[in-house]
Length: 132
Image 1 (tube, rainbow, N blue to C red):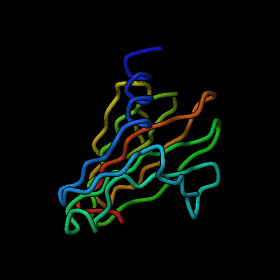
Image 2 (cartoon, rainbow, N blue to C red):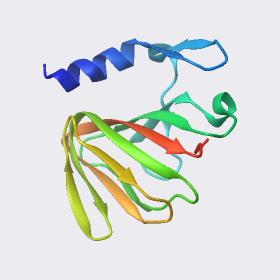
Image 3 (cartoon, rainbow, N blue to C red):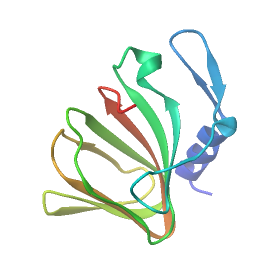
Image 4 (cartoon, rainbow, N blue to C red):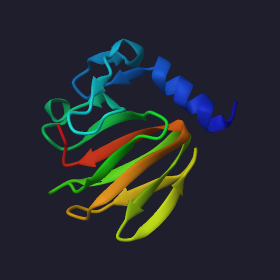
């Protein structure tokens, strides 16, 4: 197991401590099917309700061979940190290989797509302002 696989396992089994003093066991939070992209699920760790709309954090799980198709966020900045698996992110015609330890910052309004490789892809996605 790599250090990042350890991180993915640790995060999946850990706790989320929120600013209001509440916490949640990450393992007990539900995976939510993405409404537009089959094979994509999200676990909402922190939402705008927890941060006065400032930021949100989500675990993202993309099944092998599946993708989050081309889309853009307005007005959110988005940060990806790859935790496990493999894949690629295409933004502005440039492809970045996604592997554990890779992080990418995505500006608002710029279309991008994230594709999982044969082992699937897990990442932490952070949005500012909050996505949800």
